[in-house]
Amino acid sequence: MDPVVKNQLSQQVKRHFLEFLENFRLKDESGQYEEEYYYLEQAKTMVREQKRTLYVKIEHLEQVDPSVISFEAPVLREIIQSKYMLVRNSLNAAVPMLLSKLEDVDLQEEIRRARETEEMKFVAAFYDMPLFSGIRDLRTDKLGKLVSISGTVTRTTEVKPELLVGTFMCNECNREVSGVTQEFKVTTPAVCPTRNCGNRSNWTLIGDTRTTRWGDWQRLRLQENEGEVPAGAMPRSIDVIVRDECVERCKPGDKVIITGSLIVVPDVPSMMNPSELKLQVRKSLNTRSDSSYGGADGVKGLKGTGNRDLTYKLSFFGIFVDENTDWSSKGRGSGDNIRSEDKIYLSPADKAKFEAI
Image (cartoon, rainbow, N blue to C red):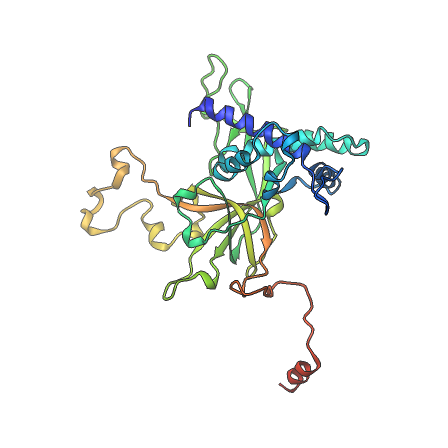
């Protein structure tokens, strides 16, 4: 997409989404709009609880009163669902702008402090999507779109810190360069913008500045539900990346619904931990031991021609994680989650049978 068109689209989405958050009201039983502005109250609750995520029900985008907005609500919803990763930063930027419009005097100091220290951590998370996509059906045509998937969590990693946006200081002229987006590893500025400096490699990360954003990060392994596996096939799995308030929301064995977007990440051995590499992969990082390539003087792949041999894999970026209570019903009613804290009560007859066993 052309950068000018992309910037115009981002600005319009931010303005229209903020307008939606300011004006949305629910309807009462008589079909009239309530006096209370729903997402303004949600924002107040978010600040009181010291949270940074504003949860938006996706169908609310089309239920807003059309007489109080200046845009077509179905068009905004279509753009968010079809180009979510493209406009994600604009949607997140509307949340702190909404907080600045709150008139609650008691919250003003907390809002000011939150915007000064954690403005980049405010996010808008969408939930309650009408349709689900099976893990087996995730293909490149769904890249960047807002979708929901369901499955069983089979593995989780520990929560790790992640550098999202860095601020670096040039060690040659002491100039600070902010807004450096990270790309799967520590990414420094290409060149110092100071005239006649030209530094390209001598940088120091400033980790405690306001413009450096750190986040919590966790990877989940999600396996498709047993009812979605075709006969004679093995269950498919996908890596799910969650951040900040979505971490530690589930454990292995949980049946969950995750809303987010399909993304592409490099699948490069040098970006993996040594424990994640197979033995034969570790051996082939530096040398090729296959005798059919003529020993050390054989074909070395694309690297020998000046190109980088880079492969990619599909992952899922999750923004909302919820428990799926219908995991065992296969559409015939609700089931029980194995991680649920609800107590199970037995009838007297079942209790007698259980004690007899």
